[in-house]
Structures are given as C-alpha cells and as structure tokens.
Image 1 (tube, rainbow, N blue to C red):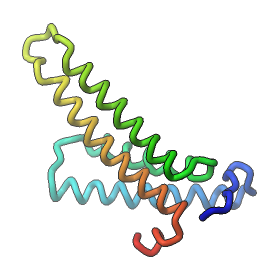
Image 2 (image 1 turned 30 degrees about the vertical axis):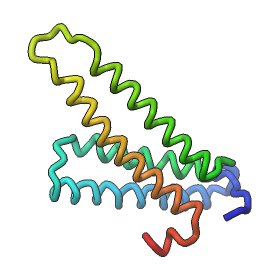
Image 3 (image 1 turned 120 degrees about the horizontal axis):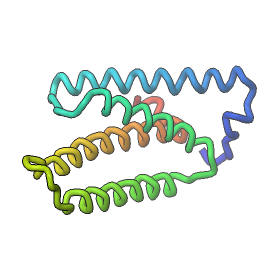
Image 4 (image 1 turned 45 degrees about the vertical axis):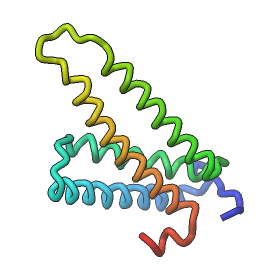
Length: 140
C-alpha cells in the first residue's frame, strides 16, 4: 500500500474505536495462541510475560503502521531492538554476582527475555503485515 495512511488519532472517534477493537481482538487471539503453544511446548517462561510481549508487539506495530515508517525502517527498528537486547544480555551475564548460588541467574533471566522478545517480534511483524499488506489478511 503505497498511499499515505492517516494517523488514527486524526480519525473520528468511531474509527478509533474500530481500530482499538481490531487491536484488542488481535492481541487476545495471540494471547490464546501463546497459551496453546505453552501447553504444547512448555516454554518455562511466565505466560504473563509472553502475553505481555505479544500485546506490546501488536500495539507497537499497530501504532507504527500509521506513521510514515517504511517496512525497511520497521525491520531496522526490530534489528536495533535485537542488537540492544543482545548487548544488554552480554553485559549483564558477564557481571560478577556476589550472591552465592546466583551464578546462572542472569543467564536464566536473559533466556526468558529472549523468548519474550521472540514473541514480541513475531506479534509486531504480524501486526505490521496486517496493516501494511493487503494479502496478509488472506494468509491470517
């Protein structure tokens, strides 16, 4: 879709309510998907954290889809978030921890954050495709 999209805040209140309803329904669907995937694969990460990640990804992508950001810019934004999380993970896991028995604690938290980021990125990419590409509706 090459035409410029108008920001939802500038739309009438009914259009904003419809947009909010679509975002909420997409978020609920993805939360149900997270629960089902957790029942199958048993991730070991909090369902609340993973659900929060998919809701945040859906909301962020929905907001960004109505800005002037291009698909390349969106991909670069996700890549920047990935690099930032990787850098933070390396820094935190390399710090010495004074508590006995806490040697693997930073690594464990890092792995939980990575899984949450994967769910966030999937939800954000799904939301971006939903709003930007007409054919994504058919695939979903």
